[in-house]
Image (cartoon, rainbow, N blue to C red; front, side, top):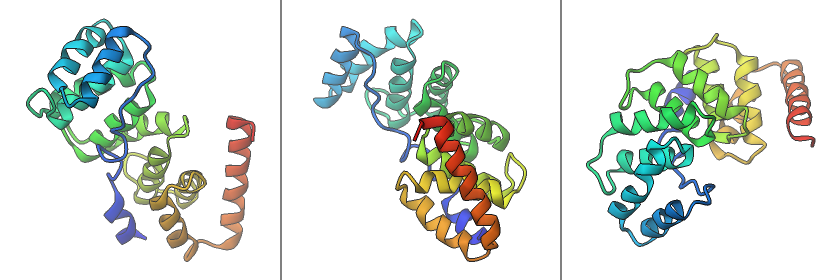
Length: 200
């Protein structure tokens, strides 16, 4: 299990969490989206920067992505982390996931597994499958949280039920060493959590 989780720790960052967020209806934000679709990142930056500075969480997140990817600006993970954190503090799920991944990997910010777990947990509770998977990995390795196979399986199972492939693979690996009664108890907790949190 340790070999498996080592290979997947930090997989969330950039790859899993950097999806263009599109929830803000403002005209300037839309203009930024259209600019991105044309590959005109400088215009997107010009449209989103004032919105981000005014406190719009979605614009902050997307501005962070421009800096992280080096699109329209020189690539700078420190500046990206600043914008992601500002958006995350407002409850923006993708930003919470991304800043958590950056803390886990020490990318643009000092590595801190406790901070990683704090931010990833917030995103995981909002049904963000990569964050649920990463919470499972953190519990499996005892990084930033107590090492706990039941907690690891709980979060990995939640992500697997969203068909997140790394979680499906990790679940199968864990089932090889966890006692069936422990798996059954955790899966019941997952059922209860889903019932409480989604009404399913």
